[in-house]
Each structure stands twice: as structure tokens, then as C-alpha cells.
Image 1 (cartoon, rainbow, N blue to C red):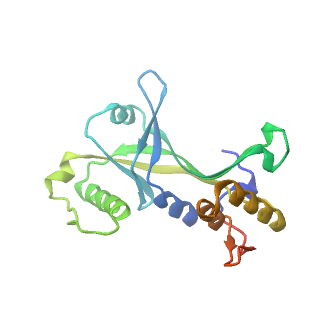
Image 2 (cartoon, rainbow, N blue to C red):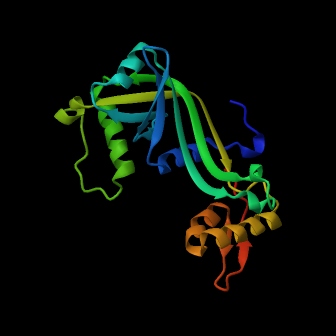
Length: 212
């Protein structure tokens, strides 16, 4: 995977943090006819791997048993930038702010009950942060009733475009355009990712450069 350096997420920890901030990823396996099958899945990155839980039967499990080579992708759309931000009439100038992570790896169906329980607990910790559940252990029947897919990355890269490639005055100009198009409240989460702060008087200030 070839990445322009200024768009590459340099920190592995920030890649992991991004993965676990997102609710769904897509796993791509190869079916019996040699075609990619892409399935959206809940997941967690824990203990150096991606874990997903699944019904114990299905095509993706058959695919993995036949060919463990898989891809896994997670992305977050930040904001569409219409062409007129950059040129009065040239539609090709439209752009998007986003964050994405692409993984290539080896998949397996976990048999060990202890590892399955740890994976399920990690999934619960991610998706049910408020708690109010009993932690799972290897002896519980439910642990044996579900399949756990583990993807061990052999290659993992992140890419982001959130305004870090713009000079600071130009980033403020783009922030004003986003506010004008989206409205202040809708724009606030985008501006936060761009490291642009809105003061009480409505003025804009860059707090730092968004580095990942």
C-alpha cells in the first residue's frame, strides 16, 4: 500500500485508538469462486489482533477455513468539501476529509475457550462502556455457542486527510466555509478534528496541527 507521507498515520497507537473508536469495520475474505466477499462487522482491536464474533456457521467462516488471507478496513467520513470551495465552476475540485485504516492479515476461527472469552469481554468493554453485565468466562455456554474470528495483521496502515496538509490561514478559510455550509453546530465536530476552535465571539483559532 503506497501512501503519501503527509497523509499517513505515523503512530501505531493512534491507529489502534482510531480502530476502537469506530463501531463497524469490513472484513474481506475470498469465496469459493475466487471473488472477494466484504461483510460489515462489529469488532475490537485487542492483544495485537482484530476480533469479531459471528454466528457459528456461514460463508465467511467457510471462506476463512479455505483461505486465511483477508483484508480488513475501517473508515470515518469527516466532511465533504464541495468544489466551489476551491474553484467557482470546476467540479473535479471537490474533495473529502476522512480517516481510514487498511489491514492485510491472516484470519482464524478461535477454538480456545479462554481466548474466546477474552475477545468477547473486550467487545463488551468497547460497545457497552456503561457496564451492567457479568463478565464472560471460558466455562459459560454462550462462549461455546458463538464463533470468534481473529485477524492477525501482517500489514496495517492508516491514512488521514483532516486539514493537516493546509497552511494555517488556509485551514481557517476552509473552516469558515464549512461553518457557512453546514451550520455552526454541525460543523463543530469537524472543526474539532481539524484543531480549529470557535471562540465565544465567533472568531476562529487554530489550537494545534492535527497530527496522527
